[in-house]
Length: 411
Image 1 (cartoon, rainbow, N blue to C red):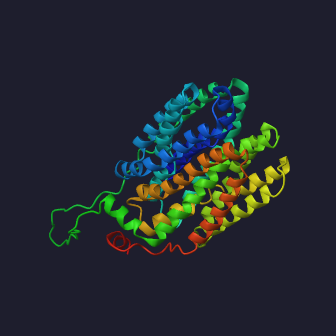
Image 2 (cartoon, rainbow, N blue to C red; image 1 turned 180 degrees about the vertical axis):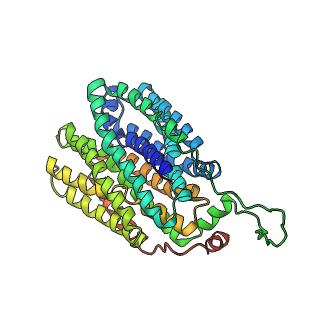
Image 3 (cartoon, one colour; image 1 turned 60 degrees about the vertical axis):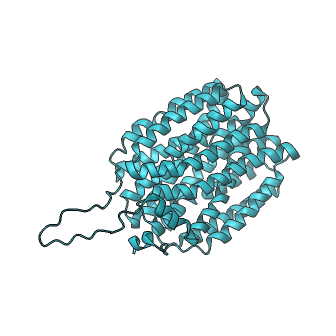
């Protein structure tokens, strides 16, 4: 278990750490290529959408064959996408590499695949804690990689910086090899009867992934959890990509934005680990509702005063505690309600909602900025959505399995 947890955590550290710094490239690329903020934002919005759409298929693959092969593919696609991001001079090619290739790479190398490993090899009593450890690793990646990306951009230029990150993404290959012991649970099959032994065989055969998905989508709590996760994606994508430009628009030095993103990563290490621990004892839906409500309060306080280095630091630290804290309880609820046999796939379907929210958050912010010259409207949309998500998560029943064969298997 410890080898799987160690390798899985470092995979997420690299994969999430690289993506969290993409907002630092918005202004350098737009200025050199002569593109609008909406054009850059649309490429990253496509990235989030492709990540979400390909996630269930990658999760199904990992559930059937284990995590190693998806991780290897993810490493290669990540490197290729970063190289394309560095060299593309045509907006269509930039969108293909930054959006499609990196989006597929993230589906292969982030939470859906790694959490499937944890679900298969960690007991239910430790699962929330283990998922908190992995989410904290993603936060450490942000804390580590964002300052590194900023240093590379200022030291060697934004194009060479992307080349360096492409080489870094290939480190996922040996980490994937460290997860080769991950094997999905064997499917039940008919065995020759032995004297004195009664063999129970499900006359309907093992449940298919499609059947499990159909029953999960009919579960009211799964629906509410999925709808609430849309808001998480919207808020994180908007802030992660557009906060550096928002601060520069208010005449703050570039290092303030870099420090803010790093602080988000630093404080989220404690936030995700702490929420993972609390999820062992407290109601996970209530924890989620509290996280979304506190995000809304933090954003209201942030935009109520002109931004300064102090207010940005306080906002970053507060949002950091809440940043990826939704990930451990969300995935732990899916595993608890629906079991671990199809966890990578079913978790990826919930994550698809998150990525639809990310698409809207990244693209809409760039679009509204180009229309109005301000991010103010987007801040208020993010606040309203946070309140909505808090309300949606309150009725979730984490101990209630779905009706049908999936629920019977958990009884």
